[in-house]
Image (cartoon, rainbow, N blue to C red):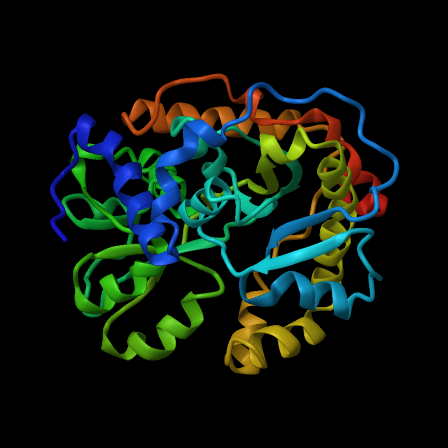
Length: 355
């Protein structure tokens, strides 16, 4: 894949190309062009129902079975609605395409996918927020690289996914280091292509999640690969859903009922790292116990704020950063938040996880 320094027009074309590739992989390309048709006409302000009507169902994202396993281990009990499908999808572009295809109703992502969905004309809303205080991503070098700092990214090829958290982490790191977009070569990829691109030398740098970096180093550190850490934080871990789903009173009630399970499952995994490491990372991800511990040692303490003020401010900064680079058009991100759900997660957890 070519990796020229991107012009403003090329940047605006990024998401179209990455979404198209993701849709082809997911078998959803036939539905990707229907975003205008599936966008909702306005958002509901109707009060949320206290109970979920019988027969209500949702299709919920659960990458590699994470949510079902957390709910089971935490013994959270049955959800008051049917999950008709646990969808094994996580990457922002894939989630957006699944939303468009009506094959997904509720997803867990970072802050950037809702911005990209808005840019593409698809109406979806944020319904729950978990604030992240510690970095979830590091920058991995290709084997044999001499790069040791973010300043050393100048003139190099960097893996960049506009529609995912990894993309905004990279942009924020560049800005903090005083590097302009034209100082580097941004190579448009989706995150599931990052490892292959590093291994082949297609890129010099790729952002990797804390869950990925131990395995990468185990394989390539002896060949000269390294990890560059920063204090750049991807602040938002969130739940979001298409406006069409939230405009359905029964489905909106089901979403509201799901949020406490999500919040409590997240807290349980944080409070029980030994069990979670063994049951998830060791048994399902094939990591060693030590690799799993290195991941949980970096885990963020969950924070479900009663107010979304900080989250909205950070989301606006992110959207403005993307607009500054020509990746999206400038807009007011407050339209992305459905405040009917604002306090649900906070009410679901003890006080120490609210501030």
